[in-house]
Image 1 (tube, rainbow, N blue to C red):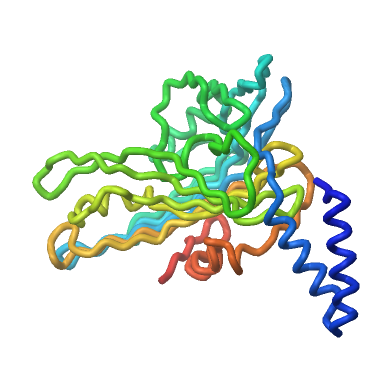
Image 2 (cartoon, helix red, strand yellow; image 1 turned 90 degrees about the horizontal axis):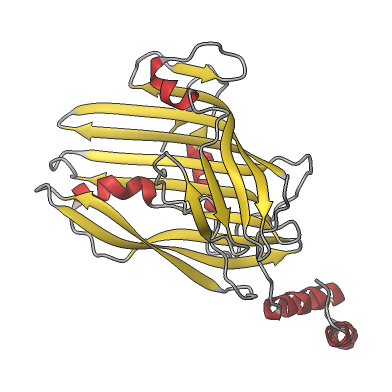
Length: 330
């Protein structure tokens, strides 16, 4: 997206004024450019073509620590997978239909001090019993999904229950109109949990999105989960902690696809099973578009609402080789 002639004139005037007042011309131009970018509008929409094959590399690392009545248990896991979309059609109004599947997985899991279990679909013939339900779905269509250019799911055909990790739907819901930096939008949702007396409660939540910055061709979208229903029960908090997320998405405006996504979890609940109980969940999920291109991303700090986003979890999560233990420490 290029500036208009008026914008160029403003930059030239600022360049001249920088000399006049003895200020740095580069600083003045950068400041003016930033100001002009803040006034620009950007159209974010999905763009897929019939026959297109799209793949993402996905990695999810998590650790859960539970302390109840003096007993302690820690569960750690790491899953690497390749997510595959095969675009079957695009209709006259731009709705795109694709088949969603998982091409490969590499899984690691350890409960307490037990021997870790692993499975790699590319190298291992047989899978441990714990992973069989996942392995039988590899390479098979999991869902046929139709989405609008704005990322709204128009139709979904799937025999699988949709996983709930607080990360939204399979696509990112995008505003229908062009938006500027700082624009916010929300996607409502409802979570279900039971309190200490076994009563089911409905919790109103929403995903809060914001266009944090744009460095063409990439738009940086931050997001976080917000719970709108007041929660007094620690029991309920323990059931929704895996759906309390924050992160960011890098959306390539020209290609019309998300090319990078990072999500983190860092939740702690005290007293969910009595006064001496503690539950701590820490995790991170990363998705990267596989296209053979190297994309230099902006650091997620500064004025972005997800300041120091990756720094905290990166310090808490250390991944050893495949047959080693993923150490997640506080």
